[in-house]
Amino acid sequence: MRQLTAAVVNATVGAGIFVIPALVARDVGAAAPLAFLICGGVMALIVVTIAMAGSRVEVTGGIYAYAEAAFGPYVALLAGVLQWLSGLLAVSGVSTALLDQFGVLAPALGSRPARVLVLGAIVATLASVNARGVRSGSRLIEGVTAVKLVPLAAFVALGAFAVDGSALHWPGLPAAGPLGRTVLLLIFAYSGVEVAIAPSGEIRDPARTVPRAVFLALGATTLLYVAIQLVAQGVLGSQLAGETAAPLAAAAGRFLGRAGIMLMLAGAVCSMFGYQCGDMLSTPRSLYALARDGFMPSVFARINPVHHTPSVAIWTHAALVLLLAATNTFQALAIISNVGLLLLYLLACGAAIELQRRGVHAGGAPFAPRGAWLGPVLGTALILWILSTATLVEASVTAGVLAVATLAYLVRRNPSSSQSSTGLF
Image 1: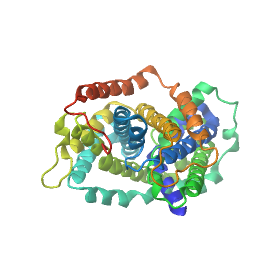
Image 2: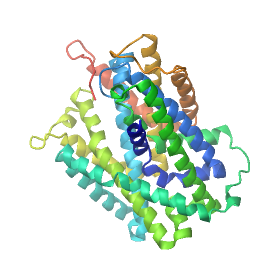
Image 3: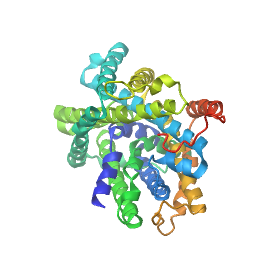
Image 4: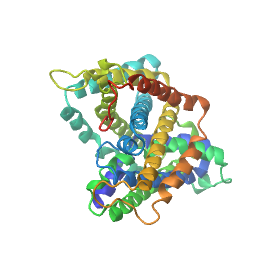
């Protein structure tokens, strides 16, 4: 259980928390901890639901494999597209936030041309490394993973002594609309947790281990997030909402001076760069798989003859990241990414319900703790509530991509080319 708990924490705590505190404070003020608690509860339901579905399916592949088993190839395709889209938008948002950190470090890098040049150099380097093979990309990830927790722990431990209690006063509970909107953004800070529990079928005594590890890990993560928010709010007060580029660095500068600013900026840069490394290793391969199975132009399925990597998909992904990050803000990209991610989680909830209804088993006893049916039901209701706060523009991006995917599926669906999509991704 200890290893699974650590894996969930590592997959969850990431780049978003270095930026999100200011955006949350702007939306709900000092009541931000409530939004973190709600989001943590929603994610706990979702993760347990994913574990339930995963224990009933032998095929590897995560949510798209569960969707295939429950609903067939079309829904599995939509799941694969949602995963690719949310990954693309998420890393684009993180890339924008990374450029903001560089702008704080060196104001000359804050101009639009400088941002494009810096990001272009970063994504080109990452694409080049990953086009040479998985091993090269994995080494980069291993080198930056553990660094992110040190500055966050120092921020909480040292900043607690500088908190002004009056800045934490709640004037009242936020309305359901703004609160749901805030949770929609906060999903970004918890995304990735589902990856850590994907191999739940390989865990000893999953019915006992998975829920305990998930609740322990998400509880610890939520407490860390709340502590970070309280320190940032308690140190900066109403000024926190205006520090959208590097709020934790601004707060650390108040109680640690220049050293605190540099510590938090270094932590943010390492965490965000690590996120980029992981994404460049995984997300382009979803694009490759879609092309390989006829749902994207075949050029994206080309394999480098020397390194045996999907180099066209990797370089295309890098170009899209550069375009999106250069023309959007972190908040806009994060929210649109979360819309797609929540729809993916919604498919997981539906798959868990359907697989349980049909009594599907993967061979061993499925993961079905007492009252487990409440997980996907409550998860579905909460996801729909959160999605209802998205704007028409935010929802239309995902809807448009899914419409194109549907058209591609209909074009491809004919007697000569139809086939099971099991293992598509």
